[in-house]
Image 1: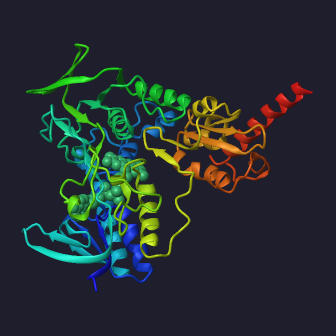
Image 2: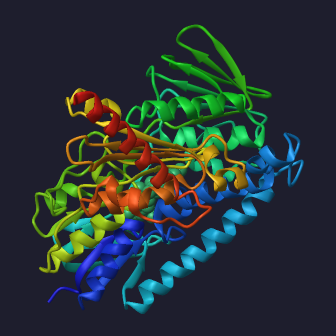
Image 3: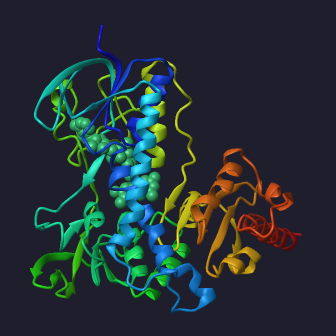
Length: 467
Ligand SMILES: Cc1cc2nc3c(=O)[nH]c(=O)nc-3n(C[C@H](O)[C@H](O)[C@H](O)COP(=O)(O)OP(=O)(O)OC[C@H]3O[C@@H](n4cnc5c(N)ncnc54)[C@H](O)[C@@H]3O)c2cc1C
C-alpha cells in the first residue's frame, strides 16, 4: 500500500483546495511545500500582498476621498515602505494561519521541503538541511505554480532592477519607476505606485494593453493613470538597462533613454517544473515550464494531475482553486461536472476593472448583434456619496432574447459587483429580471437596474423603428 492516497506538490490555491477536497473524500493526503511558502505565491508574493498593498495605498493616500475633501487630502504625508508593510505582513500572517488550520483540521500531512519525482508513484522530498525522505502515493497532483520570467539580457539586483516578487522587499518607495510590460501585474503595480506619487513610466512592446478587456474601459483606465502622471510608451521595447549611482537608465530600442530609481520587469511567468524531474514520471513541460492536461486536469500519465498556474491560462488564484477541487474529485473517482464556462476576470488597478462574458469587439467580430446598457456611478446616489464620479457598468444584451452576453464594470467595487451579473448569466437570466428587481438604495448594485433599463429602452426604440 502507498504511503498516501493523494500527494499534492505545492500549497498555493490549487494545491490547497485539491488537498482539502481529497481529505473530505476521506483519503490520506499529503501536501509538500517549501518552508516559508505555505499558501504559495498567492499568499506570500502574489495576490494577497499586492491586494493588501493596494488597500494600504488607497487608505494612506486618501485618493478615493479627494473628490470630497480636495486634492491635497492625505491620511499620511510621507508614506514609507514600513507603513505599507505593516498591513501586508499582518494579512499574510493571518492567511497562513487560516491555511495551516484548515489543512490540520482536515488531517492533511504537510511535508516541508522540495519534491521531485523518483518514479511515477514516488516523490523525494528534500528539506532545507538537505535531508530527504521518499514517499509513495497512488495519485499525485502537481500544483507548483510559476515564478516571474527573467530575460537573460537583464541583470536583476533586487533593489534597482527587480521583478514583481521584489516589490514587497523594496527598502523605500521609489521616486520614479519604470514598469516593463503592461500585463495585469505590471499595470496593477503601476497604478499603486502612481497613487503613491511615484513617477511611473510603462513600456509595452505591443500597441495596446489589456486587449482582452473592453476597449472603452481600458481607455478610461489609461485616462485615469495619465491623470496620476503615468507615462505610457506603447510599441516600444527596452533594449538594455544600465545601473547608475542614482538608479538605472533604461535604453529603449527607439533610442529613448528613461532614468528611474527602480525598474520592475513584469514580463510573464515561467512554470515551476525544472526541478521536478518530470521525465522520471514520464512527463514533460513546454518551453515556458507548463504541463499539458486534459479536461479533468489529468496529464498524459493518468494518475498524475496538474492544476493552477503550472498549466497556464488563465493563471488566476480564483480558477486554480476550482481546478484543484475538480482534479482531486476526479483522482478520487468522484468526478464533478467540470469548470463552469463563465469565468470572471478581476483586475485590481486603480480604479479596478472586472468583467465576465464577451466584449463588444469579440461580439462584433463574431457578427453577434448586441445592445449596450450603461449606468454611470455619477448618476447613482451611492456614487455621489462615495465620491466615485467615473465608475460605470456596462451590460451587453442580446436583442433576440434579452439575455446577457457580457458584463463590464469599472470603478469602486467592480470586482464584487460583477458577481451579480455572473449569477444572472449563470442562471440564463435576462435583463427583464434586472429591470423588475428592487435593489437596495442607495447602492452601486443599483447600476444593474439602471443599465438594464437603458438597454431595454434602446431595444424598444429599435423595435419602434422597425414597425
Ligand atoms: C503580483 C501578483 C498578483 C496577482 N493577483 C491576482 C489576483 O488579484 N487575483 C487572482 O485570482 N490571481 C492573482 N494572481 C495569480 C495567483 O497568485 C496565481 O494564479 C495563484 O497563486 C496560482 O496558484 P497555484 O495553486 O498554481 O500555486 P502558487 O500560488 O503559484 O504556489 C505554488 C507553490 O508550489 C510550491 N512549489 C513549487 N515547486 C515545488 C516543489 N518542487 N516542491 C514543493 N513545493 C513546490 C511553491 O513553493 C509555491 O508555494 C497574482 C499573481 C501575482 C504574481
